[in-house]
Length: 149
Image (spheres, rainbow, N blue to C red):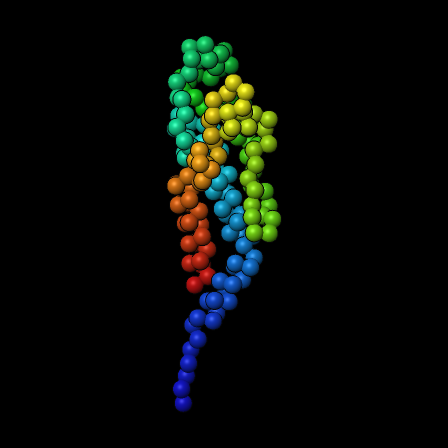
């Protein structure tokens, strides 16, 4: 008598199910991008943003001090409206959208008007995700696949 144990079929079925219904994985990927964008808004260096001009003009520093903010480096965080507007939407099929609904978002992300470009979404000038964010997304995918096996 020959006993054959099929280890591959159950694994492949789980993998097929994960690919067919990627909602959880997409939500986790959306959370990575949402969190990184929020972190990029505040702090001296952000988490994963392209370089910005960090120095503030003396007039801008005085304006911030009048608002009760004591710093001499650039961030996009004053009242928190922009940061709080960043949200990962519910996955739609096989994609997820992360938005910033505050009216100032495009001023900074795209450099509209007289504003310099101060990208807070972790995207390079070429339109690719930054290496760090790509690595974090790969870790999410690997963790999901490890859970399956």
